[in-house]
Length: 93
Image 1: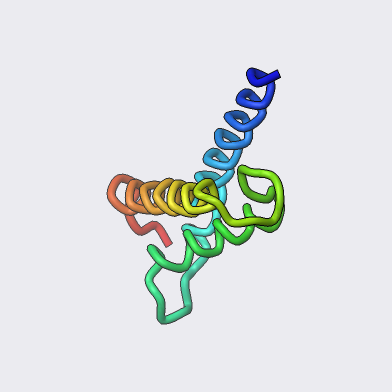
Image 2 (image 1 turned 60 degrees about the vertical axis):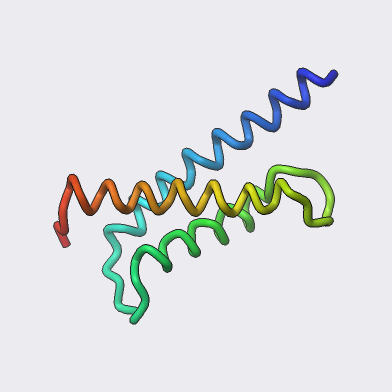
């Protein structure tokens, strides 16, 4: 039973990270007309969209260490994706 729970959690983490990469790429190519850096706005939008649509990695409504890990991992994945797009693809728009 424990293996099934671990499999479901790992599956959700992988899906969240892949969705974070996909959404970061999509939002990277939308022009940023705000006064905030794309390194702040895009990860914030991506985290909120994933939290709203998929939820986080634990069950229940109590904050735990998994919630901190959820925000940290998704922020880092999104920021690294934006950095790689900026560095290797350049500013196409």
